[in-house]
Amino acid sequence: MTGIQLKNVTKRYKENQFEITALEDVSVNIEAGEFVAIVGPSGSGKSTFLSIAGALLKPTEGQILINSNDITHFDEKKLSSVRLNQIGFILQTANLIPYLTVLDQLLIVKKMQGSVSKADRIFALELLKDLGLANKENKFPNECSGGERQRVAIARAFMNDPDIILADEPTSSLDTKRGHEVVQQMAEQVKMRGKAAIMVTHDERMLDYCDRVYRIVDGKLTEENHLA
Amino acid sequence: MTLALKELLYSKGRFIMIGLIIVLISWLVFILSGLGTGLSTLSTGVLSQADFTGIVFEEGSEYSLSKSKISGSLSEEVSAQEGVSDTAALSTFNTSIRKAGTANSNEKITDIVLIGIAPDSFMEPDLVEGNRWNGSEENQVIADISLENEGYAIGDSITFSGTDKEVTIVGFTKDQTLYHQSSLYVSMDKFRDIRFPNAESANGIENVVSGIAVRGEDIDMQALTEPGSGIEYGTKEETINAIPGYVAENATITMMLWFLMIISAFILGVFFYVLTNQKTHQFGVLKAIGGSNGFIVRSVISQVFFLALISILLGIGLTSLTVLILPETMPFQLEAEMVSIYSLVLLGISILSSLFSVARISKIDPLTALGRAE
Ligand SMILES: Nc1ncnc2c1ncn2[C@@H]1O[C@H](COP(=O)(O)OP(=O)(O)OP(=O)(O)O)[C@@H](O)[C@H]1O
Ligand SMILES: [Mg+2]
Image 1 (spheres, chains in turn orange, red):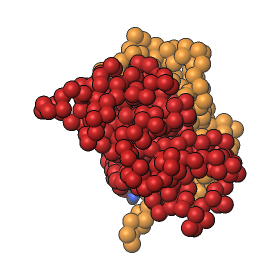
Image 2 (cartoon, each protein chain N blue to C red):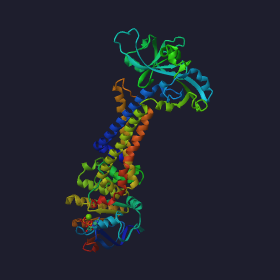
Image 3 (cartoon, rainbow over the protein chains, first blue to last red):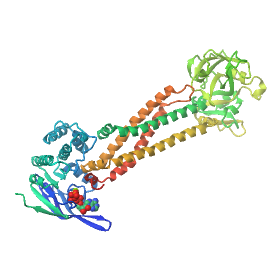
């Protein structure tokens, strides 16, 4: 089975004597080619959910399967390799490396995997073009607009040809128009390249681009059926 | 690797600061080391530049040529000892000179060390200017080139204080100094003529010399140097270390050098640590998109390596420029070997000092990329 599966995932943070349950018994299954949104109020556990799905954080209980492969008990080194090869993470703020050009932002992913081939370079340029960033490849992040940066981050997430795309509020720093553009392009890429994608968002207007919507409240996840 | 270089080029200002520190430190290290070598040549040159294994002295002279008087005829006996392949008699005498024909004027007097050697022996120094003395002419001397700065030139006649004997400079050698004074090489016969004008001054020793330098491997002088035999033997190292002031002088400079290195290790360590801390978020991002610790650490270390390498090369360049403007009389001698050793040490120290940061990097949580775990 391709895609990502979370089975009965619970996450508790220990803070002093208190325990916060950020996620409670969450189970989802997202197939390749599906674009899923997660909505919910602040502090409800959205980032926690995404971090666990993105192999950045370990659950207290439950299992995570990527392409039917149980990664729950992987050590940091193996997790890092999962992130490198199977996951594309689009962070809340674009999080580009300041001293790399737009093109290098993408190629670094390949470099971390070993080496950069000519085909990688062509693929990177193609991704940039798809996202409307043609001719911007030699700019540095501080020379790009917020929307451009966010799109570079999206292109970067696709660079390693991952199975899973995760996006944490990719539109939070963009105006509505740009936000729509970015999400629309993301949806296109997901469909075109057959990825399983999860997007966390505050912005309910973005939900039209998604196949399914989950709402998370106090760590509990429920599917919404209002799309029609 | 390229990641490291790209950052170096992008954040030039920040790295120029650290680079400048390394440049200045390496500059100072090379200057100090050149000064150290220069000073030690000044105090030991005649012995340290010569190729010999040890010297036979008078018993009780504590390996000091100026305190030792033995008979030159001991040479045969010394040659017969185990391991000895060659011998050369050697005499030294601290005196002063002035140009001939100026006896009563206010002409400058220069302190020198007069060195008596047998012509053609292995103690004869290499010339940098002029001619070798020819055996029949006893009045010829070879002077250290430093005397040029005192106004002496080839062909000049000089007299020694306390005698009316005259000699002529025929050639210059270099780095032949002893006890911080320039040397003047004369043949052994002329030396005796100047040093011991009458038989009593030589304590009645026939063929008197200060010591006999020997060459050879695995030399065993035991048979000759029994207590009471009147003879002792010191290796080249012992002889050099016995030169007054040399050990203390050398130790001081060496200590300064190593302290400088240790201090620089700490300064650089702190710098790299601060730099790493500033980049915590960036490293977190790299980790979140799958960068392994190895990848990041390699990139940081190669960055420090490039930075240090370039800075040290600049330091060497600056040092070479400095040499050009140093006054001639300054004892400064830069040896390629020393420069390479200290360069490697500085490079090692820079990398070592970045290891604090490396430890820090491997602890960075990729979650920092989410901007939550501040
Ligand atoms: N490292 C942590 N240690 C302790 N508690 C944490 C930690 N991270 C998150 N929490 C808590 O877990 C809960 C869920 O946090 P999370 O960041 O997942 O929320 P969120 O839905 O992403 O909120 P937002 O929309 O504001 O980003 C919150 O109550 C938060 O305080
Ligand atoms: Mg969040």
